[in-house]
Length: 55
Image: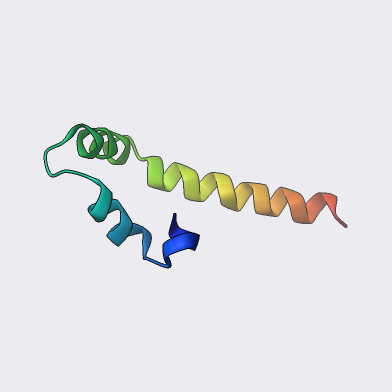
């Protein structure tokens, strides 16, 4: 949807979630569990591994 709309992901999230709704509660739980940091680390590690094996 981000590519289709050109909207910033945060704005898109706000547009498709209901305040105090089910999705927001789920997203808050993911944030509390550190999902953002974990995803950043995973992408960073995968990028480094890709560079290593492509040499």
